[in-house]
Length: 211
Image (cartoon, rainbow, N blue to C red; front, side, top):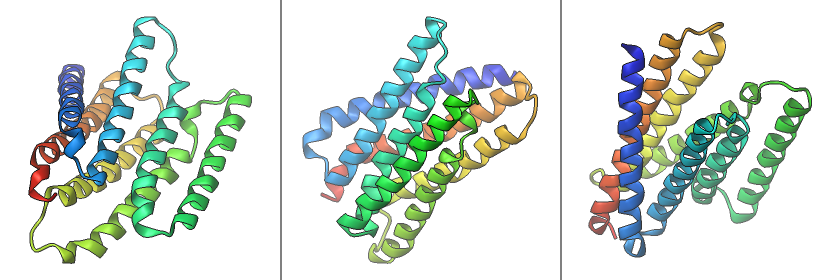
């Protein structure tokens, strides 16, 4: 039953991701800069999903995509979020420091022939993203008389990364996870992704309200 749940949610998640990218394409020229960054974020996810599924079909291990996925995710969101918090110089210094840490850690794990998913990079990056979004929400929510769709995106991002981090840590802490338990955990993660993609779809179609 849990495997069926995972498969259904996975299909829904991928479908919403495709719709979100398509809606971003048709509205791209009219999108404000913030939403364009969200569009790049979705395009990156789409590319990773496509390559990952191709590798699975070819029966090739897709584990080497993991560092690229984590790094790309961090880079896109940090360029968006840090720009709102730090000066241009500080932003690039922070991104460079964390990028070098990520690169060094993954080279070490690869040389030691250890599982790349055991790195601390994803946890650290998620905490940075969560903290940055929380700061922005506290700073800007008073400026709005009512919620607009961009602000809703940040709220959904905050909950997505908070719960996703919890699920990731939970998965790594559980030893000898059964297929059913893994399906439930990753099914919940895909459910979160579906909510995130849906919020972007709404924003792309409602962008005229706050341009």
